[in-house]
Image (cartoon, rainbow, N blue to C red; front, side, top):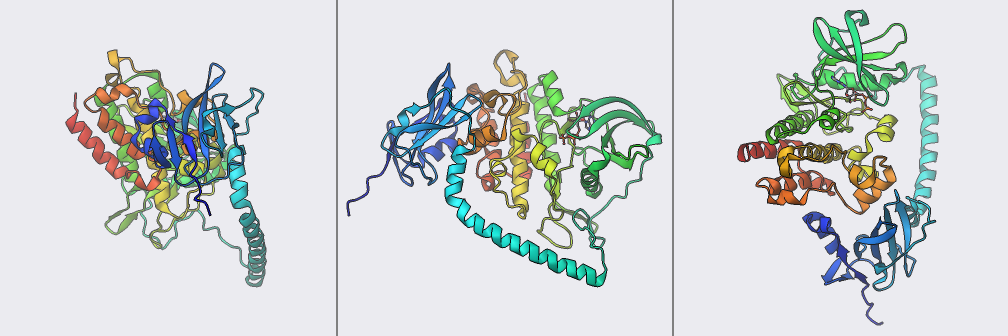
Length: 485
Ligand SMILES: Nc1ncnc2c1ncn2[C@@H]1O[C@H](COP(=O)(O)OP(=O)(O)OP(=O)(O)O)[C@@H](O)[C@H]1O
């Protein structure tokens, strides 16, 4: 049998990728590279990622495919078109990825590429699994129905409650009567909540209202605030909660953050290097505290994954430090009675559908997160933390020539436009393995290499290779001592 010839593909990576050691390694690992040609090690497919510039596709990345997939076409036909900006193609003949064939009329089928692969690999076994699961669910429901009838019991919902036997500290907060609060103007709106500035017992407070139907979000958020062992300066201070008698809406009373969200803060001003470090340090400390597993005087604070970190869910206080807020999507990762098990099953669909897409880690975008593995959820938070650090430093005038920091942008907004979609993020972040652009001139700054390394260690595509939030705090502490201006 003749020795099978290995596939040869054109190899090219863009300038921005070249500087990213980790991303660069991913493409070069797919085969040995000599000049502009790569001999594929593991697949028979060449891939091309093209960017449309002035109506013409220009190669962004050309390489052997990194993962074994099917590629039935001999020529590189455009398969996915995202935001009129990117085209991808895949083909199975030598050097076929040097030219892409595409038509302007080509419609956007963001999932077409993923679906072909997915269909081939997953559909058959999935049908079997689904049939088995249907059978299993019907049988289980039937059994539980019979049991209930027999015992005449109503099954309590355990989903969102800490068991009474659990030794977690639950600060019992006083229920607040809405008449005790004087409401002033609206200071923010989330997807469902409306936040007012107000006065309560002589202090300025923020009052977050959730419609009556969002009892679940209200309970989750209140529960997280209540179980935090002691007040932490980087978690917004919780003062109490209640329900309005008229429209039955829920409300949570919080310490008022004078600068509002980090997003609105960065949209209005740029910061000095030291100010940016304070923001980054307090933000990482807040997350590190949230993730920590603390035992004090026989009381337990289990780790909590935030799961919806974004610059809208981080507040900036008058002293220029950050405080985390909005725990409506958070998950308590370990119950006291059952160590190392996820405690509350946060099935909140709002979080999946409306959570800020930009900050979703690649494994979450792809749906590969094992929700029973607490580490995965915390690593997802660290990915978002990396993007937040980038967002803060991109607004730091000391890191830009002439002190002119660019206008504040969300991560990937520059690359994918303001209406980022799940499909475009999947392609860009997950498949192309790209991250927000780190300015090249940072390499020339004394702290530039450390900043780059820190960001890359937070947003690594391999979730297990990411730093922990605790080590991010340590890295920033050493940045503070080594590079104080
Ligand atoms: N304590 C506070 N002090 C000042 N402003 C606040 C405070 N809490 C919230 N806000 C403002 O209200 C906005 C919405 O609050 P929050 O994120 O809690 O609502 P949400 O509906 O849960 O949001 P999301 O859409 O992210 O789920 C924040 O982005 C911020 O601008």
